[in-house]
Length: 393
View 1 (cartoon, rainbow, N blue to C red):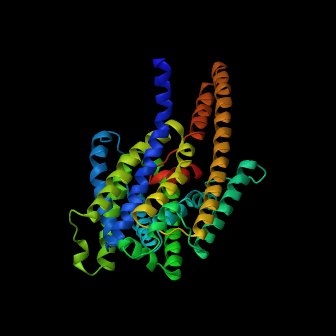
View 2: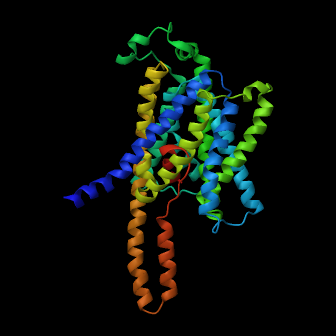
View 3: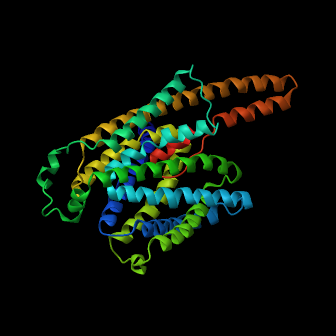
């Protein structure tokens, strides 16, 4: 009885971890939106977030990877420089700007296009082979098209306001505070600009994953690489902030919501979540982790409507449904591809063993190494959607 109970707990751990992470990511989006509504510069928020992330990850990288850290070369340095520019600088600044102009639910829904965008970039750079005769490739392409259609619908069609049962009492902005007033102030132009900003952020994020797939082969220590990217991104973000924000007062931060938003985003979503998600992906694979991504959108929608009096429109709901449908289509195609690779690896191992028994040991060793490489996956980054992007490459 105790053994069965222990087995159930062990099987339930990945589910509990991923559900908890979605609540953590949802909290980051809501806290960030509150901070931006209160007037904090998103440029400064990016600086503080990645400063917290660097300080929280660096000790673990220094201790756990001090003996295995690869030598730094100019090639690796420039790759880290570009990764920092794509992630902490371009992705985060455009995402926060889009979040300010739209809302956390919209931004989370649009982030689910990451897997499709990464797949397209992987095909363009010939990292992904496309055989349209296979059903899994057809599923990936169809999912990508449906995802793009959903993103276009969310961007170009706002639609009527959705009346939610628990938000009817907050339909009037009077007495709704700064959050409600900010929600009402968002017009058609701001909505379109916010949509474009989130799309640009997601494109930068997808490009980061494509480049990271190459960089991780030369610099395979994840903690050290993450620390260097966060630190370099912090320095770059400081320079960008000095250019874009001429007022020194924007740097002022006290023990308030602004500090909480920066610390929470840096420590929880960029450090703890990175470690926990890495453990889950190592045990279950990136496709499992990616499947929980839409849950964050639902949690954010409920939290946002309660805390921020966020208004949800029909266009956003319809677009989100298309994006989630496309996401699962891409993930299904990737899951089938992974199954094919695992089956091929299992068939290769007996062949390698028989050849080794026949006196051709070196050929068997090569086949085994290639089989192992065929099923190896790597991931890292922000949220379950990031795992989807890693699995799409």
